Each structure stands twice: as structure tokens, then as C-alpha cells.
Image 1 (cartoon, rainbow, N blue to C red):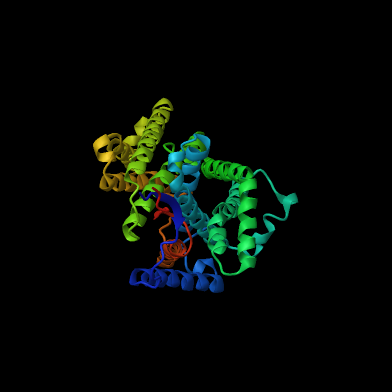
Image 2: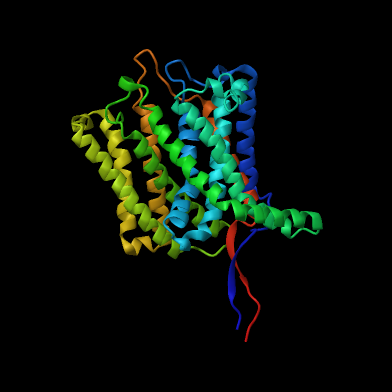
Length: 394
């Protein structure tokens, strides 16, 4: 009688498919615009100003991009802190998604900086550090990207272990041994750093003070942003696992995702209740009658709808409803970040902002590059879990 063993295996197959080449083309256009930006200055490609020093590059690529990259953080909390080992097959692809999200967010920050050539001073000139949430975000995001590389390195070592070179095999085994012995410290950093910088992204929007609309100006912003990133992390893990299974003809994780979605539903519902309660207790419900109220109702309403879908056991057990709910939760949680950084922020009547076409092209290019790199990595390295037959036994 033959059994099966769960292992991480490369997807394999031809890399230069038509969809992959389309992704490369979009990423290439974004790269060309970015080169133009570095050659002729940030003003040549953006509508940023002294009133709006950040736009879609920071709001979408960094604030939302890093939250999309919190799949590894969210699943890590379940697997390693709450001891839910059944979710372990989702960890490695979630870490890959996190690494891509954070790595490309770093690139977006470099593109956004006016004096990008001085960025190297940030981690070195420690005597100039101050109590700044922006500094904390910069240091934590960079450090977390390095931690994610270490967390994902076993996939590289497992690939090298199958090499024909004895030297590479020895290196791979040494690397795996080192990661195994130091895993507890890597895990601690992998959970601490996102907790710090995701909450600090909320803290940053306390600095504008009266320039923020009252519906979003609250001392609870750090907590709201932290829980918000967990919701987005759960949603992205569901979408990544489902679409990867379909695209690469892998076994579906519908049952496991059903359990994960149940957790996500309660987190999203709890966030929504807290958000509304905070506004009510602070006496801000009257603002809901304004145009800003539509944005507020939109972000909360989407999360409530997504949670309601997943709290239905019959729908939660169906892959199509898992995907629909994940998309709704992702959009709702992302809308809160867009509202906080762009909609609720008003530097004055003399300033206005709408993204320029080159800004959007760079953003599209960054996300296309993220998807393309993901496809290339899972086809080459053991990231996704598969099932291989074990030796027959009697």
C-alpha cells in the first residue's frame, strides 16, 4: 500500500509564458519611467508637492504594499504563537509574498525620496537618530526584509542540496543546520519588527494633527493599523494559495483555508466594531453625514460584508466564496489606509493632489514585478507544498 508525504517542491514548467511576458513588459515600462525619474527629478513624473509630500508611491506601494506583505506575519502568529501547526503548509509561500511586498516597498521608498542618494546614511548615522516614526518604519522595514530573506533561505538550501556539486551540497546542509539552530531568534524578529512598523505607520498620521479629518484622527490609529495588516495578511494568503493551486494545478487547500477564513472573519468583525465604537464614543457620528462619511462607511462596510460571508459555514467551505470574501476584506482594509493617508489628510485649500500617469505606471510596474518574481521563484525553488508518493509498504 502506498502513502503520500507532504513536501515543498518546485512547480517547474516553462517560465516564459505569454502572461509572464506581459508582466515583464508592464514591469519594464515602470522601470523605464523610474529611470526617467532618477535622471530628471521627482517633479518630472509626479504631482507631489510641499502640501502632499506622499502620494500613490507611499500610500499604495509602501503603506498598502507592506500590509499585503503581512501574510507571513499573520500566519506566523497562528503557527508559532498560537500553536496552530495545521497552517504550516501556508507559511513558506506567505513568507515569499511578504519578502516581495517588503522588498519592492523599499524600492518604492527609494523612488519617492527627493534625495535618494543620502538613504545610506539612515542606518549608519546613529548619532542623528531622533524619536521619529518615519525613522522607525524605515529601519524596521529594511531589517524585516533581511529577516524574511533568512526565513526563506531554506528553500534555496534545499535546492542546492540536490546539486551535483559536493561543495554546494555541504554548503546547503550547513545553511540548513544554522537556520534550524537560530530559528527561534529569527522568528522573534520576524514577529517583532512588523508589530513595530505597522503600528508606526498609524502613528505617522497622528503627526498632521488638525490637518486630519476627525473620523480618522484618533490615538487608536497604531492599533487599528496593526490589526488591519493582519486582516490583509489573511486575505492575501487565501488569494495566493487559491490562485497558485489553480494556475499551477496544485492540490487545493480549501479545508485549511476555511479554518483560516473563520479566524479572519472574527478579526475583521472585531476591527469593525472597535472602529465604529471609537467614533461613537468620541462623539464623531455627526461627521458621517458628510462626504467623508461615505469613505468611512465604505471601509467598515466592506469588512463587515466580508466577515459575514466567512461566518457562514456553507459559504466558508467553498473556494469561490473564500476568494470573494478575501477580495472584499483586502479592498476594505486597503481602503482604510488610503482614506487615512490621502482622503482624510488636508494640508490646506492651496494644495491638491491627483496621481500623474507616470506615478501610476511605476506603481503598476512594481506590482507586476512582484507577481513575475513570485512565478519565477515558485517554478524554480521548493516553495509550494506538493504531495509525492512514499515508498510502497506491505
